[in-house]
Image (tube, rainbow, N blue to C red; front, side):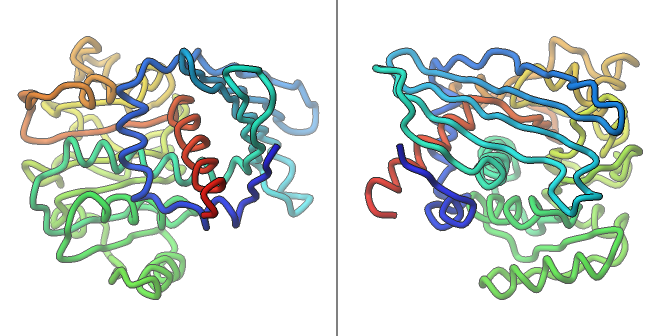
Length: 310
């Protein structure tokens, strides 16, 4: 069994390398059961175990194992840890152990990039990244892989963190500037990607350009919101999995208030399969919460690269 650690994962693939594997994953017959969520009933702090399995008929199978231990902060350890185990579809034997955090960074950004390739304006001028966490660098990389932009901005509550993200990406050859005012930046952007832990909306629909694309990554619980109801009103809304409608406050609240009709929400699977242009509103919104067949496709791609010598 091969082992691929954090640095090795990021050395084997960039986000752009995974856009086409993601397209294949979302058009395949892969099976991804609903993730298993277990509360470990720890009296001191929340401890959670998540299991995300997926397999392809006649192909490999795999499972991502995620733990969320809130009190790890006191131990100076990451609160979220993850491991991916890839298994042979023929024998059931383990093929690879892959560090799960790095795999998730690549997978998440590649899924957003695929959605942007299918939904974003054909010739956008400005990309705005809202959020300065680990994902921000990879989301920018993914969006740059599928569209050409004249300028890229990054905004965060802490300007110094936004400056650090911009400096890192500039050092990699992608000119990025810091946005000082969120409203002004949103009004100027054609594509906006959000990856935050916001509990109240940061993006307001009245700020959005006609024809803009909004990529929402951060809201993964019912009490989290990155975008207000007006962002959704009249927009073409797509998701990586319909579980997002039950899991994310960005969709739960607008559906409950009738801003979004649940039956009108489209899946990324459908968009990836459809060869004809689907009629859509002037604005588009993509909401992701993570889907296991994207993890499986990423794991298989990494193993192929590993076997080929990188």
